[in-house]
Image (cartoon, rainbow, N blue to C red; front, side):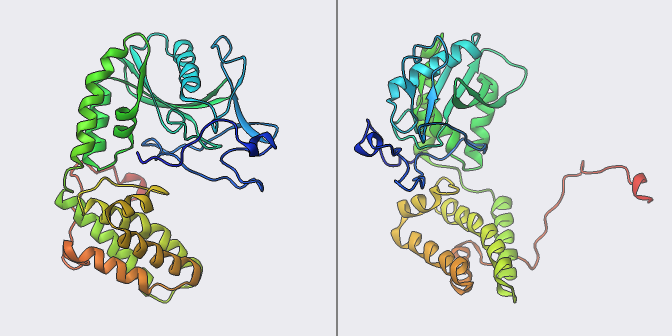
Length: 319
């Protein structure tokens, strides 16, 4: 995960009634890390115009409010301990991670947990609010977490790995997290494996298809729709094609700039021109430039074979 701007104690603006993480007009200034591997909408409670989290009863946080934009990591960790003890009392340990633990929370940050049991039937993600605290928990045992780590690494998606590497362990057996964090940190430092040829071909085909649509006579709304589809595809090719972890959303410009400021500027210029002026030429040029080292556009001769088990009875279709 890439760090955003740091947060801290109560500011003069906050004493005047403004929230850290928002400007005086109430426009949120988003920051913090990439989210967990699955997207969920965020939520918050507000008190006097600012988001606050009241601590779970009996957690030791009732004496004050936990504010995602100003609470210390120690305060957030205390709330996490109370949540794990009440909701997951049989868990071996839990990992607490994310922007709140780094003191970089925004108005809509939540608490990220990875909860480890000795054995469960199947892994799950839970999103809930407790005591005013929005929480996203990924519940695993050793085997299901190992599978999730392998899948994330193979797909070049670092969010789960970064959560584990930076997390603080709590619960009955926090010492069990030591080896896990060490191994995962090594995976992150090593970088993702190269894309499999079939994966790269599928990505090239999807980009080619979108670019060909963009080249046609399109109205502004259609080009915006194509651009929204194309941006993450090109970002994945640019990052994975250079041996870097993939990024999505607001993390794409940061990841691209981490490789080359010029690359980040080319992406920004091209898609600004498309979205603001309906000008597609820069995006088409960018796509051609990114595809070139990987064989260029892909259409003629492309074949994607379905798995032989993908069959169903045709009776309901009258065949």
